[in-house]
Amino acid sequence: MTKLLSTYEGLVSTTVISQLRQLGLRLAGKKVVHVNSTREGGGVAEILEWMVPLMQDVGLDVQWEVIEGNADFFDVTKKFHNGLQGFPVTINSREWQTYRGLNEENAVRLRPILEDADLVVIHDPQPAALLGLCPNRKGKWIWRAHIDVSRPARAVWQGLKPFVSGYDASIFSMCQFAQPLPHPQFLIPPSIDPLSQKNMDLAPEEIAAVRHQYNLDPKKPLLVQISRFDRFKDPLGVIAAYQLVRKVQPVQLVLAGGGATDDPEGQKVLEEVLEAANGDPDIHVLLLPSDAHRTINALQRLADIVIQKSTREGFGLTVTEGLWKGKPVIGGDTGGIRLQLINYHTGFLVNTPEGAAHRIRFLLHHKGLRNKMGVKAREFVRENFLHTRQLREYLTLFHILNSQQEASTIYI
Ligand code: UDP
Image 1 (cartoon, helix red, strand yellow):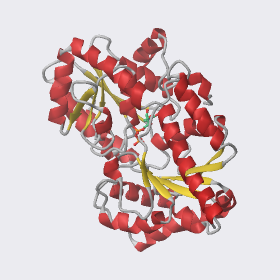
Image 2 (cartoon, helix red, strand yellow):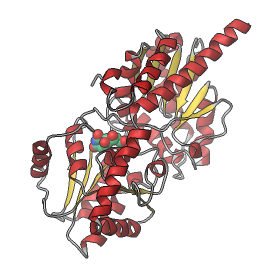
Image 3 (cartoon, helix red, strand yellow):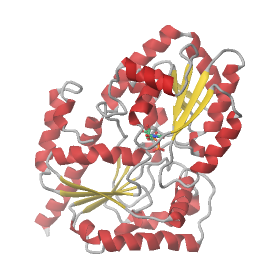
């Protein structure tokens, strides 16, 4: 998917486009390298897929590198992920060594590229140790935390902090996630691409074909949660909410997700989900390939209500995607979901399966309000959560850091 900035004309104002071009001119030719831990699956890969080509289109020289890990490494970084999101995990010295060791192996390959870059953006904890392994850095390094680190397990954060303290800046999705760090911190909420396969308009026939393919009943209201099979996405809570609603009215549920290559726990959670679904023909557990964007798009459009009942969430792109499809979203009262759901306007925030069931029933009984909320939901995303806004914020940050560098060169 390579998109040019000009394709956003009509969706955003020409002023927005020309501001981005001007920022690009100031940064023309700068070497930027993004590093994360998976090429596909999950929100970070999804972001880099559009951001890299758009940054290139405005004139930057951008590369996307992925660190190579093994099962042991991803087990450890999964523990980081859980610990940073508040689970009480402990990481022993052998596991810290695995973390450092894999970063060292990757540094052998990446060091020349990273040391030569003007700007390096390291995404999440997996590759964070690379900074200390590139002593001859020429550019500015930014650590981008995508996860909810508002209440991290102390031992995990204390262990990781030395790896991230040396960065020139960090980016968090929300102010609640900011941490005491010895460098400037910036807040940049994520965004979605209205032109991607995941979010573009689809022909009614294609949507109907997906309904048919998955044997969904056109007469029963449909709840849809799209998520990796991850405990923090609370798929069991969604099933519990569905079961409460089903006691009083017909309803069907789609839980659709695939595995990210950096998530070894997914299989276990999937088994628990299948057990909880207990063969109910109205619960559709779908394992989708990582490129099933149009299918996800269609499922979100088929939904009467989109659900994202996470108990922890960095931002929740699936919430934005649901809102963009003109659907009210019922989401967990946590992390970035709070930025997106405004009760009675774009959706509802909930804390329990009972709360979710209550809001589901309310929305199913108020079709007019549901439609009005859907219209507001789409406009809310247009104003706040499209890529053009996020691109502007990244370029502005690059410009600030880059000007600091130029200023210090002048003053030396
Ligand atoms: N997604 C997908 N296939 C799946 C599950 C999720 O393509 O099986 C997409 C989803 O549509 C969204 C992203 O992956 O664009 C997930 O981002 P989000 O912020 O919701 O959660 P994360 O996985 O990053 O925790």
